[in-house]
Image 1 (cartoon, one colour):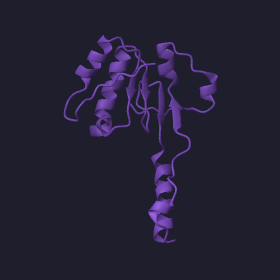
Image 2 (cartoon, helix red, strand yellow; image 1 turned 135 degrees about the horizontal axis):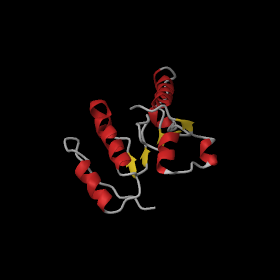
Image 3 (cartoon, one colour; image 1 turned 45 degrees about the vertical axis):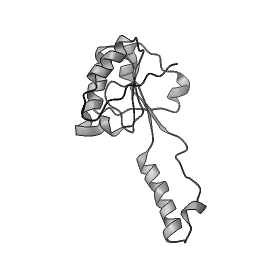
Length: 141
């Protein structure tokens, strides 16, 4: 697998970059965990999803909420991360621990979601091993 990245400034539309990537023969698209795609009610994320559907490309989301058209979403649970941060704050503020004494806490398992309709539309068979850990996505359209 090769990953080809294109940087898009927050003020620029991504469609020219996506079209350029498509012309190179890409096999799929990835939606990164980046504020660019969440701005203006997920406008860019929805547009990338539409671009993927129109060009019959699988869209993989590395985000914390599914967008219509993506086949697989892998991302952090920010509520859980907030709880871990709260635990650290309690140890510092109430127990007098110094931050440098504390271990770095992290989410041990990412959230994994899949969209069966998107998989079917693209003719992708979802491995049973993944369906045991992934949850069916509640799609935001």
